Structure formats: structure tokens, C-alpha cells
Amino acid sequence: MSKFFSLLTIASIAIASVSAQAPTSNLVDGACVTNYDASIDYFPQKLNTADDKGTFFSVSYHNNYKIVENHKSGRNYVLVQCGTPAPTGLTNVTEIYNIPVTKVAAMETTAVPYLELLGVAESIKVIADGSLISSPCFQTYLSSGEVTNLSANNKTLQAEQLASVQAQFGINPYEPISNTTVSTGQTYEPDVLGRASWISYYAAFYNYENMANEISKKMIDNYQKLTAAAAGYDNPKPIVAWTTFDAPSQYNNNTASYILSNASYKVGLTKDAYGEMLNSTKSVYNSAAELLEAISSVDVLIDETFIGSDLTDFLKNYEIASGEESKYKFLEKKKVFREDGILTASGGYDWFEAPVAMADALLEDMLNALNPAAPSFTYKRNWLRNIALDEPIKYITADDCTWDESAPRPNLATTYVGGPFPIETSGASALSGSLIGAFVVSLASLTYLA
Image (cartoon, rainbow, N blue to C red):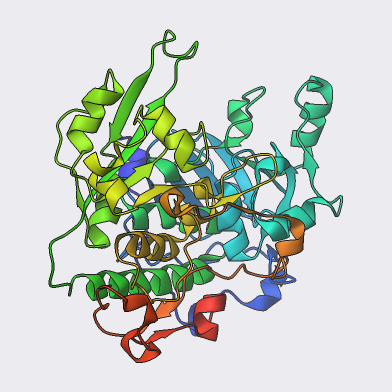
């Protein structure tokens, strides 16, 4: 680490008091400085990272600029409060940006829900492929003409489009340009809450630390309450496996294989939902028979295969013959899930968008997959679709928009305020609401800003 970065203090302090804020007379519309004073701290609102699970980024503060470090990519960004001078003599700097940004490009779909939660989705003016964005309100925004799809073939037009924005979140899939890219890394985080914590990374570019702090605090608190409610079960933990059929293609030498995933965030999510990952040291199997032998006693199977959409396709992909269903516990229990509960018409998976940013909402889905009584008997999963019960895919369109994209997007999670979840038993779905527990949707959880 350079001498420069060794002198930086990583932000882990709470929001400063109102009295410490920079005088509004120095700002234009509360954004840009008009009378710069080097002694003033222009960032009184700082990220509170005390409970942050993120491991691949950090933010440090100086009076008129911030340093955002992406530890996954090794890139470091200097964010300078507009109207103030950029610092000189810094080393290991990838790019310098004036903030707050107001016009950006989103090259990766996972960036969109973070900006929506912050209420700045309409700062996106260029998108790599809008047809893959599953947010119904962003689809509405796409139709407004305020945001354009990045040209895939016209390099001149593409360069003009990117020149019209202040920052580009993610890598251009058609023509990577390193010096205009703010690298991301949320999907590499080993923890579900760590992935959600990247809202702070994006917030730093908008001076929205206060909002990011509030969203993160509510999300972490809700996640912990849900986990605690599941930990009270007095029964064996269901065994869970996440598997994929990798069909023959040019990318695998036309040789099929079967993958058993033990990705860290999936292990953690399964554990937090009171499940247990299948204990296996092997991750790649050369045949369906070999994999099926390993997973025959699994209670819940999550199929991550992209080919096929129903149980018939699943049985074909995994070479399970008719009449053999009873050999596998997950089929006997009718516990076979896919991650395609919400799709766009062109096949874009919301699984790679909203649940990455909404950790507690993702946990609710996992809880319900393992125990239909959690977090309530009436809960409807968003992403994990049970193909053994022939649950339908929900294809999202702009007609499904229920919020204003110019304001913060509501988190899909509800706020849990009850005790331990009940366990579903025979006929449990017909039990009265008195056994469901206190599962309350509050205005605070819908806005995540109260």
C-alpha cells in the first residue's frame, strides 16, 4: 500500500451533527460550493460502516474530497465536491470525478436497483441493454426517452453517448474503456449483507451517505430479526443443494457437466434461513448419475440451470426417468426451485438485480422455500419458483410499476416484528392467522427512509 493510502482514515464514523455541516451559503442549491474554504468539512454526512459486511470497498474522507477504493479491481477514485479544487500530488488514482454526479451510465444490470433504492435512478442516461432490466418502473423510465441504450455497433455514437455522462458504472460490454469506468464488485462479495452494502459505494458518488446509512441500518436490523426467528426451530435442518446442468457448448468442449455450488453467499444465506448446505468436497460431476447419487437425500434443491423452465425440462436435464421420482427426497417433498420467478419478456433475470441489493427480501424468499410457514403462511416468494408445484413465472412489464422512479424505490422486504416462526405441519396452511406470527408491513419498511 502506498504512503498516500496509509495516511487515509477509512470511514467508520456516524453522521455528524447538524452543527458540523458546511454553511449553506457556500453552496449552490445545496450541491456545488461557491465560496471555497479549505478549513470546512464539506462532507458532514459520512458512511457508518460499523455493521457493514462489505469487504471489497472502502471510503475515506477529506475536507473537500473522498477516496473510494475498490479492493476487488484495485481501482481508486477521487470524488471532489464540485466547486472546490481537485487535490494534487496524489498517487494510485484511477480517475477523478466531480460530485455529486447527475448523469451516469449503467453498464451492468446489478447497478440499477442500488440507484433506485437511493432515488437517483433517473440520473441514468445510458444503459447497456434496457431489455434486461426487470424493474417495472425503470422500464417505464426507458419509454420516456430520457435514457438510451448504448450503441452496440456504432463506435462513434457509442463514444458520444458515454461522453455525455459523468461516470460509467460497470464495464462497457462492447468496447471497454478503463478511464471512464467505475468498477463494481457487489456480486463478488462472500456475504448476502455484504452484497447489499454496496449501496454505500454508489451513494458516495451522490453525497447520499445519510440515506445509505438509514437503508443499510434498517436492512441489517430486519435481516437479523428474520434470522433469529428461524433459529428458534426445534427440528432438523433441511439439507439444501444448489445445482446446475452445464449443457454441451463451445465453452465446455461440447462436454456436459453437473455443478454443485458452494458459493460463500449461498452457504451463508442457507444457514441464515435455518438450512444446511449439502456437505460435499466435490463441485463438478461428469454425469447426471454421479450428481444424483450425491444429492439423492437432499430436502431442497435449487436448480440454477438456464435451459428449461418446468419440471419436465428439469427431469430431462438431470436424466431422471419417469417413475424414478421417489428415489430423490427433493422430488418426493416437491421442493425443486428455480431462480426465474421474475423475468423480463426478453429473459432478463431479476435474480441478478433486486435481491442482490435487497438482502432481507432475499432471505425471506429462502426462508419460505425451506419452511412454507415462514415468514408467514401467506408469503409469496419473488424469485425462488417451485417447479415441482408448477408455480408460474411472473413476466414483468411497465404496467407493474407501483412507485415513482424519481423517488426512492421501496424495498421488497417487509419488517418482521414477531417471535420464532411456526413450523408447517400437515394442514398447516389452513391454520388461522393467529399462528402466523406478527409479520407487519409498515410504511417504514416500504420506504426504508422513515
